[in-house]
Length: 199
Image (cartoon, rainbow, N blue to C red; front, side, top):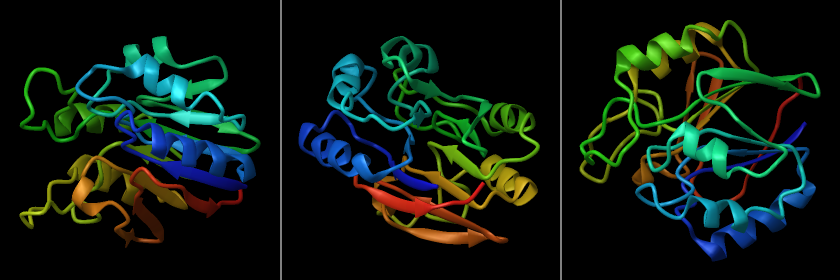
């Protein structure tokens, strides 16, 4: 299956236009959170992406809540937050929000490591794991050199062993990738990332 994936759109109309164009060749599109900014502009962000015709699976970032994303997402968009879906035989599981809790304050939608671990425990198997936050130690380094990813997400990748794990959140690590066991982990960023994953 041809997958086009991105994260951290942050209400950028030029980037959205490139993503919509790139989605024409995809069998599945994945959005790994942060469509808007600080809980503002989510309906406008979803409108910018309305030209995506392929099946579209998203998780909430820390810039929007799961309920806000479900309310703003147009028909045909699947919102995952602690749940899975199967599309044409491909199994996906998604978890949004900032993990661990960010320093950004009350507007940010975050989970503690314990909360994230509890939500990820419901996933026994997946071909693709979609999270907003990166796993600890892979594609999670800030400009200051700190590794700020999630232990719970790293543990889940090691346990589930998906073929692909995609994330965003840490802007300084956009485009970075690594391996956890046999799983390729990629911090996407707001550009078209293309993958082929067989069910």
